[in-house]
Image (cartoon, one colour):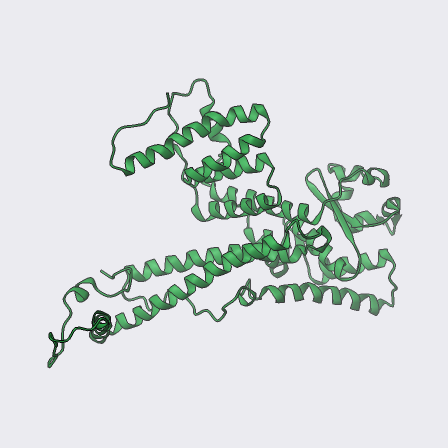
Length: 441
């Protein structure tokens, strides 16, 4: 059995094999003798068992990697928080940077999990030589994200903008709005081959770097790429949610010009594609007048939409084995008049895929930074913590939610929070060695 601390056999540590002609002095005591003896024991064991020498080094390497990933997780969140800080003007927020920090945090978290799994395998199988590949980076800016670093992905957007400029030069076209947008469309959707994913089931369609790499992504990510490329060309693109679609268009004081049809399509259709011409879409009913009535999304709003998509995606993946499970399902059971008292306990909490659930919680944490007073979001966040069996944190978040929620929603939450608090107390009660159950009066 390998020791989980140093990967040295327990028996070897307890009963080391001393070499011949080994002398000990009992008449000399130094305050560092115990450290010297410990180092000597490790060297002696490593010499007797060469494989363990390699494992000791792997332990040190793994510990270093763990720290790097943990630091990357923390730094990514800090940089995301600073990027979307309310102390900054909304126009100064970089959509690309914010979403790349989101991707970096999630990638570091998943890499950390893979590293922990590899270490577990190493502990269980003595013949495993290496848990993972060596790391050649020591900061977030150097961390590889889909084969490139964050600065390199930002440069990728710069390169796309330069391709648009080159296309305009080759056509000997000026800077008329229609021609610029046609050139953007040509580069993005023909030269680069970006396409919209019809159904969000693959997480790579919801991360900016993955969309740039795989060239397939969600509608909101494609819109963000469009906005970022046009911003580099000096063209401001605004957007708004319309039904299930997020529509974008160039900022102009004459919105009716966007709907004039030339060459078979309006400028609005050129930017937004087929959904504008689909009679089943709310976008097909828009006019220059109704466009003025839409609420323009801020950069923070757009980031929030992308994060909300991540929450839905990861929750769907986490609850895949529990078909039809909703975040608020436990609330209905607690408030069901036919429900027996105290039926809500740990054994009733569905088992979900832990990594996907944690990724959903992380996306929710970021969205709460943007929308701290959104009671429905905080309720959903608290429910995810409940599913993750973090009952103390769930009680805290749901209690805060009740302070912001409408009265009828707070009344639904109250009995659930009371029972959840009881579950937390019962866990503490049993951890102290007590038996029996606590009941709600």
